[in-house]
Length: 433
Ligand code: URA
Image (cartoon, rainbow, N blue to C red):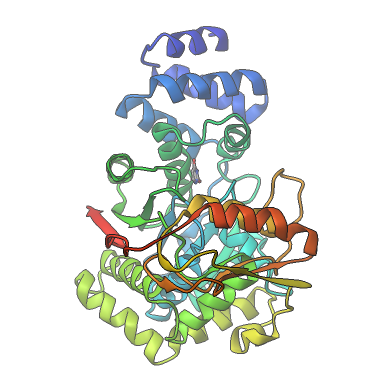
C-alpha cells in the first residue's frame, strides 16, 4: 500500500477502505508518513468529505493509536462533557465539579487553546501550582477518591490525533466535519467514559458556523459514540457571541468561580446547568429537568464550589484562589475600550473577540508561544445591551501596553452598534439524542 495512492483516491472522490485508513493512521503514529502527505490527505478529506463508514473507521483508528487507561480500579459511573471549542467557554470548570459533587465521577482529559478558542488546560494552569500532568496512578486514585480530576492529554493518548491536529491547525483543515468528528470521538472513545455529553458550538466563534452543519456534526458524533456502546447526547449551543463576560485564562477561572457561587452571568449559568443536567441524567440520576434542578442545588448549597477547591488542592493548586479569586495576580496593564456611538450592541463577533484576546497574550500563535495567564478581555456590555457614546464596552488586560492598539481595533471592528436591538437568539438550539 502507498500513501500516494490513498491521497489520489480521496482527491478523486473515492471511498477509502478500513485497511487504507488503518495504514494511514499507523503511519501517522509511527512517523513513517511524512507531514506533507498527512496534510495532503487532510486537505483531500476537507474537500471530498467522508462517508459515515469511513468516519467511523477513522475514529476507531485514532482511538486505537495510543494507550488506554484501565479504569477498573475506579468505582462508579464516569461521565464526560466535551465542547467543540469556543470563546469564553469555561463550562468545564463549572459542570465538572457540579456533577462530581453529586457522586458521578469525572475523569477529564482536556485540551489547550486552539486558534481563537480557549482550552481548559490553559485556564487551569492559571492557578498557581496546578498540575495538569498526573501519573496514570495519581489520576485514577484522585478520580476514585474525590470524583474529579482534570488533566491534559498525555503523549501516549490518541497520538495520531495530536499529530494530525497540529498539522490541521496550520494547513486550514480544522473545520472539516469528518476530521473534527474523528478527532473528538477518537479521544473520547480512548478515554472510555460510560456517558458522554457533547457541547457542539455553533456560530462565528465555533468551527461550525451554521446551525445545520453543527446539527449534522452532532448527529455524526452521537452515532459514532452509540455505535461504540456509549450513552451519548449532544447539545447544540450558541457561540455566535462570547459565553459570559470573561475571555482569557485567569479571568475565566474567576468567572467560573463566580458562577459556582451563584452570581455568574445568566447565559453561562444556563448553559452549564443544562449540560450538567444531561450529564447527570445519562448517569441515571433522573430526567434532564430533575437533574438540572439537582445541579442548581449544588450551586446554592456551595457543594460544587467546595468540590472544585478540593480538586484544585489535590492537583497541587492554590485553593485559596478558588476561595478568594481577588488573589489572582492582575495583568500589568489595563485599558478601557469606549463605545464610539450610542445604541444597542447588535453583534459582538465571537471569533474576532477570540482573536483580540489572543493578540493580548491569552492564546498562542505558534505551539511554542507562552501564554500570559492574566491577559484577556472582560466585556462590560453584551449583545443586546444599550450603550452610550463614550461608555466602556470592554476592559482589556495585557502584560504590555503596546498590545492594546491592535486588540482594540479588532474588537471595535467586530462590534456592531445600531438603533434597534438585535433579534433574540437561543442559547441552546437543540438536543441530539
Ligand atoms: N476539538 C478537537 O479536539 N478536535 C477538532 O478537530 C476540533 C475541536
